Image (cartoon, rainbow, N blue to C red):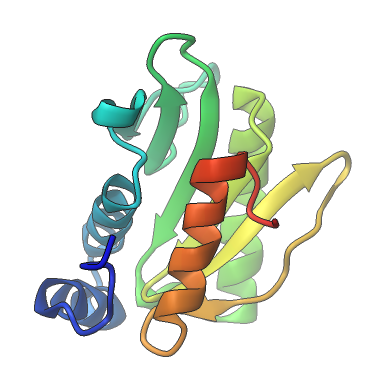
Length: 156
């Protein structure tokens, strides 16, 4: 995983695109690539599914599931940078919370532009509230994601 560095020009460009674009797809693309690169990929028994329909016919931006068991282990809800406000975060977290409950999943990521929050749903509250920024906290985010691939939790 030596290539997982902010010095990688591809990551720099994806982060910059997510930071500036009004297109939610840029944010989802960044997360799809990062999740794949940290090991949530078919080689390790996972599938990242964009816009996977849940029981309610709603579609989170990314759903990660274990291929053999069909168990959903992570949901990512993405918004463009224009949602980077208290109201935008509240709305995104509420939407993610609904998706987590519908899918029976307890791990989620709320992503707005180049920023994110890692959420662990433990009835009835979401515990993790720190906002991370890919531009300034790249290695911390990678460490959290690597911890998730090893333990199934964001926290060691």
